[in-house]
Image: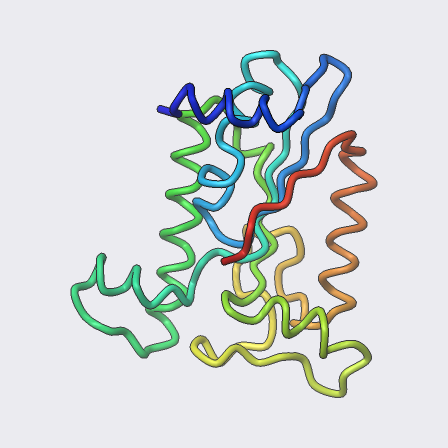
Amino acid sequence: FFCQSRLRADKSKGIILSKNDRILVFAPHPDDETIGTGGILEEAIQQKIPVEVVYFTNGDSNEAAFIVYKKRLIMRQKEFINMGKMRRQEALNAMKLLGLSTKQLIFLGYPDCGTMNIFTNYWRAKHPFRSLLTRISHVPYNECLSPNAPYTGESILKDFKKVLLDFKPTKIFITNPV
């Protein structure tokens, strides 16, 4: 499933895991956890080290995915939300193959292509950020950490705090959002 050379590359960068670690991975979208930290996740699971993965978005605005899945561009709100549900399920399936349970995966459900804008510009805002493609200004997924949370910096910070205080990680990995 994961390339062994990927794991060696992680170790060669000085990332050493111990039995006392608690690994937390922040991923912008489903699949970024695998691409960015697959070797670390694999090693942690083999060593039975506690792991949690947090997804900022469900990947609901990935226009390239629509072309692959639907063979056409999509512009309807319901289809964007359905894509987010599909990509969440794909992440659950992939992480199950790797050895993680759904309890180890946390989806925040913030808007794809909007999280950085929210975190930098939507503090104490009169109106929350509104996603360009879904045209929604709150977390639309019931399975997320804070369903219906407004798209504001305060909401993201509240979710970060909850995850960090509940899990108490010793090592945090953040994948590249690009």
